[in-house]
Length: 198
Image (cartoon, rainbow, N blue to C red; front, side, top):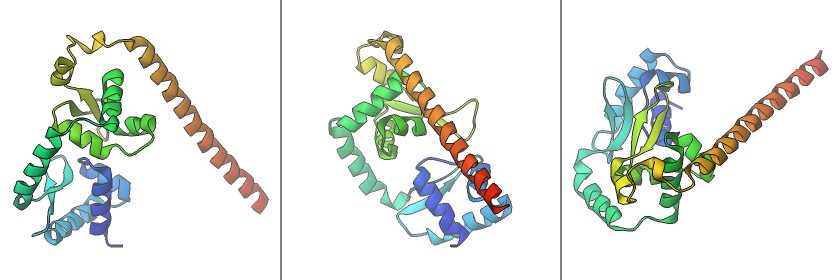
């Protein structure tokens, strides 16, 4: 498959901006090849409903300016509806975790949460910031507006905050152990396979 199509698929799947180095690592290509493919993708998307947006640091897919009217109408309709169970689950995770990646949210919920997070961002209930320890990761935080809507003066006023955060940490530790266990199992299988071949 052509590189520009792979980039389009990765950006769509990611659902959030990526840096050029991150994109290159994901696709195992050079920055020269990635830049060339990005130019090709940009040309192919001209006149379509989706466009390629680039800043000095980030690349993302976004709706084209020509679709502004329909997107704005849908956005207003979305904002006028009440939050569903999935949105409330996600908000609870963001509130109680404090700073949390999309990957961690999806692990806790067990489902893809890209659309829900987008909706919460639009509503101004959560904000997204780049991680200070890993530039490839974005962390979601509750906004002041959300804390205010809940009638709290601070996130620290949330009921059972410490005990719930402790439970979430235990769940995260278990997840990491399972990941290590599966990795070790895979390496062990490969090692035994190599021994058999010898």
